[in-house]
Length: 461
Length: 98
Image 1: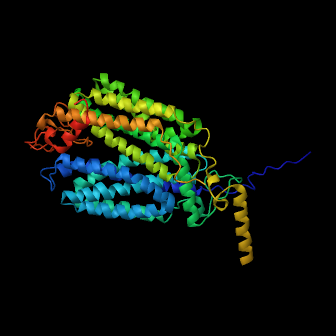
Image 2: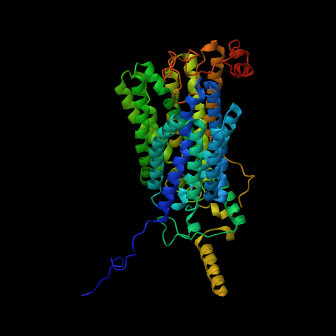
């Protein structure tokens, strides 16, 4: 009787260890919570800045202009921070982000003049948040060959949960210890956390001497190349991406999606109050949207990876658009609650699948620049939603045109996704053909490079 | 080798969306300027938790028409009309429908 051996028997199996990629993911989740605390603080700081009995007493127009500056600067710098992340790696960006966060927040605590608020909050913290959101989030792509959807879903969901905890925390601090101490605490705490996490964070698996989660033995090894070659590869990769329709359409879709839900997030509460819903019940609508958006944020990337990003993104945007119909007839609190739950699912799903889509269209290349452009679209969408929605309500005296506009943006997004390339194949599989042979990662070249390195090492020994 | 001189094919959808958003901005901007009713402009860039309702009640409970309330609302100068401002005139010139 032949004896068979199981190569993965308990005797030979290596002890299970947590892959470094999951630790990186936990670090990124923390960084995202710190980064999101900036926009959380934005909503909370309006009341003390506007309070006539407080130290500021600025009108809402001025504060709104500062927040608009924050959005616009964020939209402009997102591609730049993405590009810097691709060029220098996400780790230096995290360190820079920690320093910027600490300095900017402490400075916000010292604000006495309006120009200071524009500079510290509208410009410096906008750049900081862009550094936290774009290159750091995009770096997940390099750490996960498999399960990118799960990793992205966890990242977005933890960011949503964290934001829900951070917001009341900041509000309590403002009440308890006042403006300057609050922002000094937040700055030193958040900045310190980011700088501390930088010690354990690595931009890519090769920097930690490991491989990406799910990497197979036949995958080409990650080579450490010279700066010149890395720069050339990035240039050629970005050039190849720019010549695809997806490169232009993805930021457009993100912009349309954000414009679609931006209008609803801003104006659904005033609408509910207008319909006779109490303030606390109206506030509960936003809470429902937030909670159900966490489900959407978590599920969309996972489903996008399994089923394909196109149908999932279309479904999420369609849900986001169609649920707005409820608002045309909603009179009672329960109708608004129903809306909040359904809309939250679509809204959460709309925003979180982009990293997976990027992988499906462009492979595992340096994608922070593309993600930066997508964030540019998203922030522009929010700015457009705020302005257009407000103007439409102002001139017509009704919320309905703004709601129609929201649906229009969401459904246009669905159409644009429908017209996009299939995500079943990488759009630029041959982008390395444009590189000189020594800069490529084809197996043959990689083998040669590894062999040369081994020979060199042996000669040295 | 790829070079930067090759044409970048910007898709029609991108250009159409950009044009439509731009047109909507001009249309509603010009409409707002031409329908300017002076001090009733109380939209505050949609700051969360501060957007006034159409009936003038701020969602925080403050009366947005009342400048002495806890929330001060952005308004044009008492004596200025949007149509007299440089940006108001720019909107009106740019829009063929207003």
